[in-house]
Length: 220
Ligand SMILES: Nc1nc2c(ncn2[C@@H]2O[C@H](COP(=O)(O)OP(=O)(O)OP(=O)(O)O)[C@@H](O)[C@H]2O)c(=O)[nH]1
Ligand SMILES: [Mg+2]
Image 1 (cartoon, helix red, strand yellow):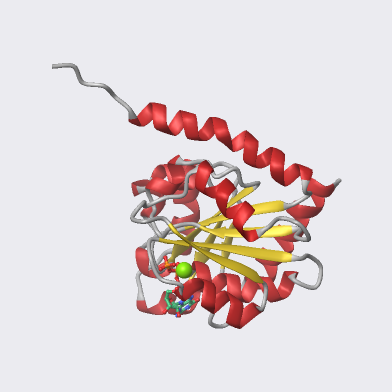
Image 2: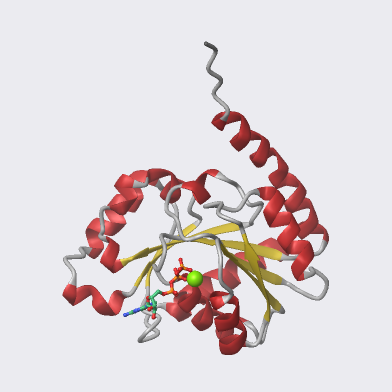
């Protein structure tokens, strides 16, 4: 019996299409950010804190991707008022380039400068599929443990920046900040690591400043 390995092919075909998404966002002068983490690490909550720090300067849109429910899009709309769409993957655990492109068209790219894609909560599959974003923001929440970059290496390899979230619960968990940075460094030599609590707002300003800097660099 013949066995065919299709995974490689699917991933490489997807990643080839990323250039089409980048061509679209370049043409429209949009900075596109892909936010990834395990379920519940704090992606939506962080966006509700980040967007108010950026919305005076940029016209922002948000694509919320979930297997089901409109929960996150409603939260973003209610808390920030920015243009938001909810996308359902119908069971898929990651966003492909095709879905990314369709979501950008569904959101409507005209009149926007900055778009956040909240990917499906999953620390494995979304890392394999390039969405065509300009920046991958990867969250690691304190309750998950500081060893996660070692166990889910690809996610931290593809990260442009890492946000350690839920810093306010550090005293309850055995989370070693220095170990977290060292573990990220074993997978990624350059991604800056931000320590954040969306509950106390600690570190949110620093992450917003980093995004501003990255967007300005891209604009030059
Ligand atoms: N203590 C604390 N809780 C937080 C923080 N950020 C988020 N949470 C809580 O963590 C839970 C999950 O947060 P979400 O923002 O929904 O996480 P998510 O990554 O968007 O979740 P999915 O979209 O389901 O993958 C919620 O109960 C939040 O209130 C934080 O900084 N500190
Ligand atoms: Mg969410």
